[in-house]
Image 1 (cartoon, rainbow, N blue to C red):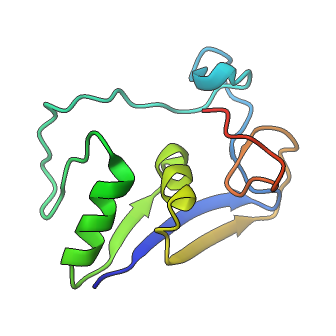
Image 2: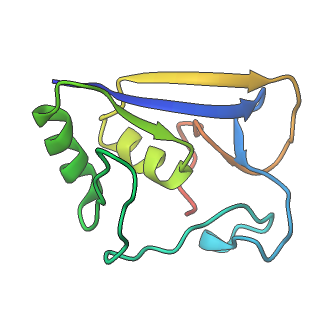
Image 3: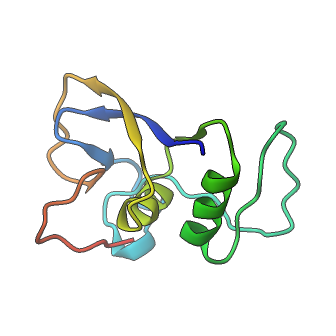
Length: 118
């Protein structure tokens, strides 16, 4: 069985979606902007060994993890990371931490009393 590994760049305070253009990504009433990609199940993947996941993503990732002998790697994608964290599917985090603090924004690791906004 493979591992699910998250590779991500974050500042010291763990903010993943920080201040950018206000209209860049307003999912979940996020006021600062960020990045978003459209979800299209008809998307054709060009990368070797890629799997397009649609529907119940944590369940599909759990199946892929069980069936794989190599690691499943996630680079970025806070929404996917949050869903897999909630399902306790992430085995390893490789974080490149930058020495700056953004102060506000969506964080990679939420406080226990926080709620997912997006």
